[in-house]
Every structure is written in structure tokens, then in C-alpha cells.
Image (cartoon, rainbow, N blue to C red; front, top):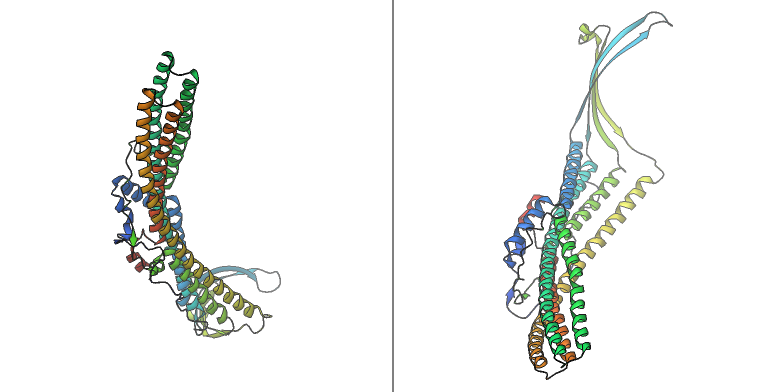
Length: 447
């Protein structure tokens, strides 16, 4: 076959990532990583998303298109057979009485693929088909990650709403005590107004949280191919975040990125571009075909197949484009440039994959540290509030000290939730970056 034979692209990868954690924990269950959360509801949502997501449905339809194109291309290696029939009216001399003639025939043709143009086209189409399958798996990985992220974001908003309402109850208690102290003459009206203002400030946060909560649920419903409101009852019960602060992946080999479907798809696209150089190159050479015809033409249908009305022909034919003003050469040049572009895209895909893993490794490690500090901070502010409330009730401190402790407590508790949600999001992004979410055995379908 003319044209280059494809060689798998190579790039030097590090043995491990720079931000690998030093503790002894391992990446586990990469193909079904979401099971580490031990949340049956999340598992159910992911299963349903894989079945009903509309982007996945579109990707699977595109695979069917590629499969049909592959079958159409492969049929070019086989002979063709056509049948035809006709009836004509014609005059023998001038415009005299016409005579009727009936015709029936078969024609066959077979292009002998001497220089491999058809086989290169099959090779390119097969690579495109494999790429479409890999892209569907890549989309599957993204869908799983998005479902998990939106699910935990929803849980974070639920918990943030609960924390805000609990703090509002506490602030109402402070407001009542401040009113009592005002009536007793221990504090001024200013403290009562400040206590009321703090309540309104906290109350104003609730609509914003409720809006974000609903919008996150809408996004989750869309990922599952459901109409808005379908998951409202199912997700109404609050759940605590999984305790995953211990999670610290180490020993992650960088070659894991080579199993990512998007990297595989980019390689298949390179293969297709390489094969299409051969398709273009084959146009420089002659095409050899064997053709044959058999036909009958008779004045009556009943005598159609009598030998005196029949004829046949068989023989080779050669077609060679001698001059096209450089069109074929320019076409080859364009295909070579397309291969170069596909190679650059493959390399960028690999380097982007490495960067994504590094980004999420460092983010996971540092967010874990932040969660630890924020948990301690929240505990300190909680103790500070309890002490401030007691001292204020006894008249030992000013109201502004109590007000500040209330604000700090609410802010700290909300920061803990935000940080834990970010930590979980980083874990999810890390598994996504490593190509988790599909079975390695699925690659066998692409071979």
C-alpha cells in the first residue's frame, strides 16, 4: 500500500507526578472510583445518567454513523453487480411506424486495489470509528464527574442552608435577650437595633442559598435527561458529607494518562490522518478494474433471453489521471499537514492530561490542609461564641463583642462546608483527570 504506515506516537512521561503525597494511600477502583464515597444514592444517579444522558445518546448515535461509514468503505473491496431493464419506442425510417424494443442486462465491476487506495481508506475509516468510540468513553467520564460534583455541591448547599438557619435561631435568642436587657435598662436601643440588623443580614443569605440549591438540582436533572423537578423529592433528605480527609493518593504513575480515552481518540485521529495520505497518494497511480456486461434486447418479452438477442463483454480497464495541474500533489501535501496538526493535538492532549492531574493533586493535598485548619477555627469560634454569650448575659462584655463572635462563627462554619465541598470536587476532578470511569476492557471493543 502506498503512503506511510502509521506508528504510535511517543512522548517521554515522568515515573510519577510531582505532587504525589508522601503518605501511604493508593488510588483504588479507578474504573468505578465513585464507590469510595459509599453513597448508594450517588451510585444510582450515575447509573441513570449513563443510561439517559442526552449528550451520551448523541455520542452513541455518532458511533452508529461511524460504523455505517466503515461498512460502506469496506464494501469497496468487493465486486459490484448492477441490473437494468428498459423499454424503447423507435422508428426505423424517418417518422414511420415505431417499433418496440425490450432490454434487460447485468453489469459487474471490480477494482483491483493494486496500490492500496481502498485499503488505506478502510484503514482511515476504521480509525475514525475507533476514535468515535473513545470520544464516547471520554464523554462518559465527564458525565460521571459532573454528576458527582453537582451531587456534592447540592449537599453542600443543603448543609449551608441548615447552618445558616441554625445560626439564625441563635441570633434570635441573642435578640430576645438584648430586648430583655434593654427593658431592664442595662443596654441601649442601639444594641437591640444591631441584634435585629444581624438577624436580617443572616436572613438575607437564605434566598441566595435556596436559589443555588435549586439551580444545582436543575443541572443534575439535566445530566440525567430528566425534566426540572424530577429529583426534588429524592434529594430532599439531607446527608452529611463523606469523611474523606484521609484521602491522599500516592504512587500514581504518569503513564496512567495514556489510558485516557481522549488521548486514545487523539491517537486514532492521527492514524486516520496518516492513512488518508495513502488514499491521496494512490491517485498518482493507475486504477485497474475488471468489468463485465451481459444484455438482451428483443422486440418481444417472451423471446428476451434467446441467444440471438443477447450479447456479453468482459475485460480489464485502466484509468489513470495523467494531468490535473498538481491537484493530486496538493491534496497529498494537505493530508500531510493534517497529520502534522493531528500529531500536535495529540501531544497537547497528553500534556494537558498531565497538567490536569498535577493541578488536582496539589489542589487535593492543599485543600485537605485547609479543611483541617478550618475545622479547628470553627471549633474555636464556637467556644468563643458560647463564652461571649455567657459574659454578655452577665453584663461582662459589650454587645459588639458578642456580635463579632456570632458573625465569625457563621463565617467559619460556612467556610468549613465550602472547603469540604472543594476538597471532594478536587478528588472527583483527580479521578476524571486520571481517566477513571470506564473499564480498561472496554478498549477491546475498539480493536
